[in-house]
Length: 78
Image 1 (cartoon, helix red, strand yellow):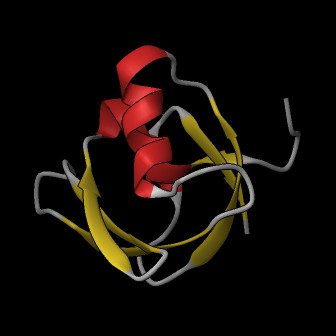
Image 2 (image 1 turned 90 degrees about the vertical axis):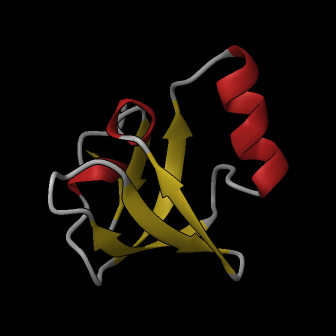
Image 3 (image 1 turned 60 degrees about the vertical axis):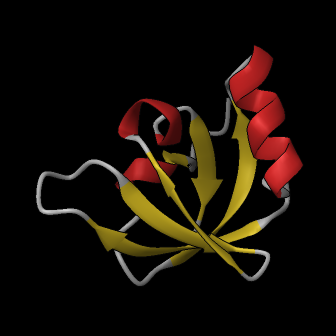
């Protein structure tokens, strides 16, 4: 695992990062890959709901909201 990586859900709003690892399996991993979220993808944290879940991210020109239980399993560097 990357020592300088953080979970995507910990990325501050307004910051950009690059996906280094996706620790999901099965349908959840396939769904993200179908959306274009793979290792090397640049992601920007756009908005965190008042309750902190979900969080909106922009990648590959699309805005996607991910629940914390998913975004905490995506590792990024920024």
